[in-house]
Length: 625
Image (tube, rainbow, N blue to C red):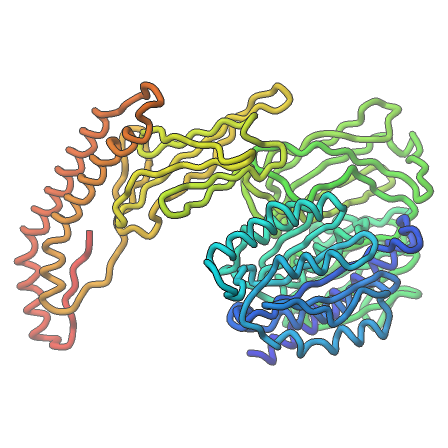
């Protein structure tokens, strides 16, 4: 397994290295370079805490170090930090060259020199303070703050460090122009921390559990740091216009498939043994990287089976520009943006070339599915800019923004990874629900929240400028109940309604109440393992009655408990008849089920005894309510 993992990673690493080096060389030759003395630098912070031993079993952190040493282009600046209970800087920030890469690769053993605790706050603070230019911090961690016990209340110290990191340090770094990107190595990580760190500074966040995840995450980060133009690759075809000076096609595929064939506009077929003049072709089990200088104009195609992450970047004096593309989008909020084509010297596209130009923006899932789309419209016939709004995303997670500009003689794309987050997040802590405004424009002055628990409104208290607290009634531990949350927001004089996801209280409860319809609740139950022998039968006999009592008592108690919380807030709408009807319906349903089970119990036991006589080692089981 580890041999196969290493082979896969080697292939992916080679592809990432080659494509990134080509892309960064292209970018450096086409984009504005930073002024002398303030060059951008990339600082990677590796978690070496003891929990990484379990949360990074495949040692992806060492793979990330190799990717770092290979992806950073020559002439950029880079540095490396490690942290557990203490922070170390084994590779200070310096210019990236052959010697720097060798030093970086030699540090792989340091990544398994595990320490017992995890101080993420100190690591980010120290890495950000070293002098440099435009800084990008890349945090690789299992994302759980766990400080060394130094006296006092350790859980409180951990929570305080988390608050300082998220509420003070990260926003301060964002205001100072630093960008934090974060990659978590385990779903057990504090993913909310990873997301908020990235969100606070317009960085990217990702969960990497496989080499493919790691490659995608690093490519997304480096494409944001060093953006490049692409041309669309659809149905294994891509267009090349007269402005293109060269293209690089990174083609992912399964190891067992036949080698791809590159077909030119004139139908000529190219293979690694038969290349266009000056072209290069790297062939590996899981990818091919083809670079073609001075390509012929027209439609090129690939004969072969390609994976979705395949892409074609181009070098051209004609560049697709956009307004700043955020790294974070929010549910319920449109994204306004502009796009235009201009030459590398800043000259706009000729008016004749703008005729019949079609510009669109799409939000795509990682598999290429379109989640939202919109055309960008030319402000006037003389304008070289196209503007519009991407509709608000409805799903959260990792996605990609694709801006596509297509004219009669040119076609360009700009692809940028984004994180889609809810505008307001909710989490439970003890008997309370804490709501936090994630969208930077939301606060207690322009946001009105409501919470409904089984038809009863609960009070919501503001806790500072961007946080709210809901105190919950006491709920039986076995009863899972949905909490309905909604928000009314007014921005720039325009009201809008945000429908937040339902929060399930006691999600591990054996009995779940799901607010499926307005006229009642639906009762479901989790399957529980049966105990052996007669004890199992006796427990099964009593289960319906116990469940009925528990459900009816819990349902009857909820309105009263909620009433006590809202007492003093004025009269609220009540649904006593609904609760009474629901309780009676549930009692009748469970009583009928109990009677049905009693009628069939004796028959089942007779059948069980007959089966036991024929199969003495088989255990009799009955279904659970």
